[in-house]
Image (tube, rainbow, N blue to C red):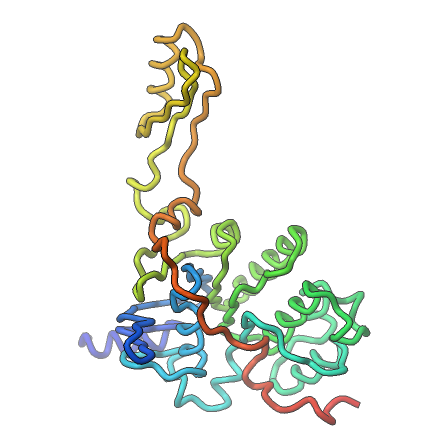
Length: 316
């Protein structure tokens, strides 16, 4: 099999395949040649500071922005050239929330669902996002967290093969976030690929099969959450208080042996002894620039692209 044919088949099989993606605004470089692959059924968390280009990347993949240079294939097609059939295969939950008008969650979900060939039932979607008790309340009367759940509902009603989630749990309380994670795990179990951005590192660690750190226009690191940064970034630290009362800290690949030597030298366990490994957040912060740029452009609201028709007059 030729290399060209292997690459073509790989693009068809992947949910997302990006090679050498660049984007500039005047002299400002937003994306400086990134490569990205997301398999079908995989959850990929794209991490980075504000201004790193996460939303720009996602909007290019959604067909809402034009790339500068590079190859972009989403579900086997070029987003800007793809038709409505392709658009019905993706779901979008952007950072902002659309003005959904004087409609209830039940009405909105039912309307958007009717635009798809094999949608989830309205009751199923309401249950998945935890809005069953609020199904008849006007969207304008929902709390911020409830409106965010409605955003997610409109993103999943069409059973998307690829779901874009741009900071989806902003405004969720801890219990709602856990329920949302469980729902996403069910979607990936059905084969849905998910591209997630989040500032909650515990969320990325819990949900993602792989994480990528976008900074300086490039993906600086990419790996499963437990392996990000490699072994050198995960060396444990031993902290203790010495006889003079000062806090001491030592990094070591053999923490148990080091603690044993400390205890032997001190005639017992040192005070305030703590052994810990770097968290995903600490490793992530090691990759990003301290002088992060201004906030990046964000999308508006949640929708599935097949549901672009106006709601006006559609719900009676």
